[in-house]
Image (cartoon, rainbow, N blue to C red; front, top):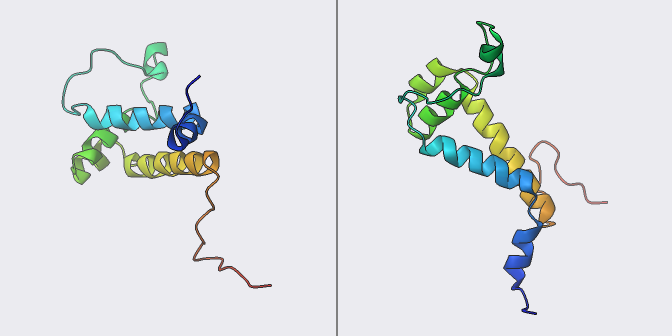
Length: 113
């Protein structure tokens, strides 16, 4: 049986949720936001609703990764917020998996007891 390197053991501790969100963000960063989509994942549109609160979010994120802030906001105003939230979630999951200490918060400085 081969012995795993320390970094390989740490990588195996990262939860699948972090890998899934990272893969999703990378996939959106690699897609062309101006191209016609081949299929739709919107459940609301499939059921027949006209309005969907999430439609355009993927386009907004793809525009954001290309630096087109105005186009991102036009596609969906919560695109930048979604990227920040998902990136924060991935960082939090990785920190917990690797048992890294949380950085000190500027709002609540550490008190010496």
